[in-house]
Length: 159
Image (cartoon, rainbow, N blue to C red; front, side, top):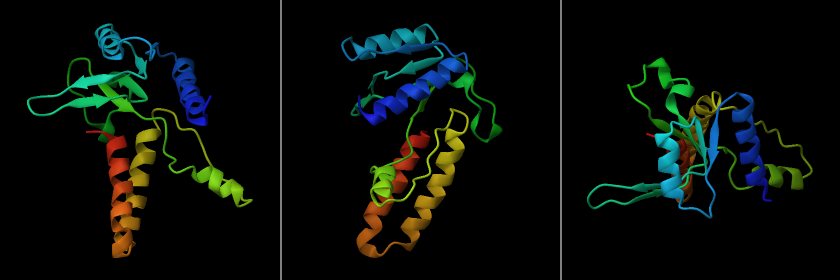
């Protein structure tokens, strides 16, 4: 099992420890149908769901790490959530490019932590500021790469 999968399973276990019900979508089944059924059943957490759809002229396909029923998460900025059941995408990773492994290979000790679903959005906002500062300071030849890092964090933050 890859390290990323092990990490995702530890996050799933944290959801379970927090008392949240979950549905694990198997790659062997019709993922979009199983995800829709889990949403209709108002599952608390959907692991490895499949999202498809889109409007005229657009297509949507995604496999988020987790779909979490929004009423189970703290509202961003403390704003009230819209009525009705809806889900938010929660990714189980902040680290890119095997950075802890690179640090360890240099015989240094990487500092890592596993965030729960309440600390993750705040950490992403901090990461966004860090990446934006790096983009601001980047020489022209590295700007596109730094902006890609900013975009990655924005995508993790969601709409």
